[in-house]
Length: 474
Image (cartoon, rainbow, N blue to C red; front, side, top):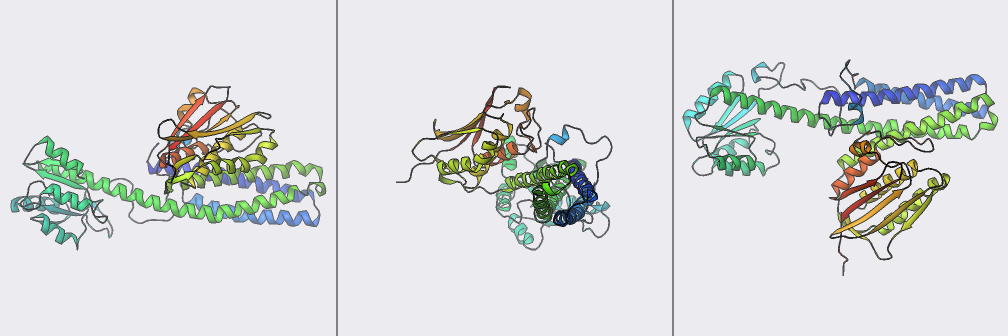
């Protein structure tokens, strides 16, 4: 995993590029079909497909514009198997937003305001000395001689960094820090403690209550300035990553609304065209089948991509939940797909309720991914078994077991990575994005559960989900 914004952009660029290639391929096949000559009804369907493709191409072009292509020799194959925690890229242009730390406030260009440092120290000499040095370097300096005075200043000024004396009369540094961290508007301000005491216990207290660093008096000017620069640079980077996260949400909104709608319309038209194969020249039939398969693959990728992002931001509401009806409903949802591959779905559930402290939306999403994967990678005529129960200890569990190829030792090292491609391949040409197990891991972690994988390569696999058990209400 990585939080490097440049690598993030490169990874997303690759997927946008792949989607655009798929669109161009589909458009070419539609043109070939038109050239073969068709009856009016088929021609109308093709016109609808071409219109959807034109709109889809415009949307993807807009996305590609926001993701500059990877620089030569910067993106490795291994990088493409993982998507970082902060999977974002800017969806709008920002002014004065650099991803590399700026060395000093005095070097800021344009209209960017100088960074503000608040010094809280009861000794006037320290306030003057530190304030003078920081001012010369271009920082805006405000000062307070006590914790009480500092909070009065903070009501009107929000600094970028605070230098806080540990030992002051009245409210000491630890108390000031705790009070600052208790307020949402001040919690992100980095605090560097200053103290004449080189007491290790005090240092631990300072860091545990929210301080980011600790400098002892008498301090070396160069050392203090280096700490100030470092923590201001880190703060800028955190803010830029937060901006990127906001941009990611805007991008996902675009994907959900425009790309998702275009793909859905395109796939419906392709399916409608497939139903008219008897009116299409024989040479065109493979092209139509190709269009249906390609549109389904791209649609599946976008849906799973969005599901993965949703899992990343989901707020779980855990409460006592009988998961037995959820398990039964999941089997019903996947019965048709399993039947098409002559896969037998076996359900082994106790007759009593199966209570877990879990989220009522999270559990079905976990089950859908596990069942979908089991069916996708199982051979024709095999079995997929769903079991569940309570215990041992304080856990409720359910398991999905298949008779597929299982996981190799190498698979198990990367099976929960986003976009991690494993050794097994779908047995009926189904599309696989490598996101399903990543989504499962995120959801289970959010519900404070655990995952147990039991598998031997070539002999099937069993994935067990443990969730905190819930007590029966009386």
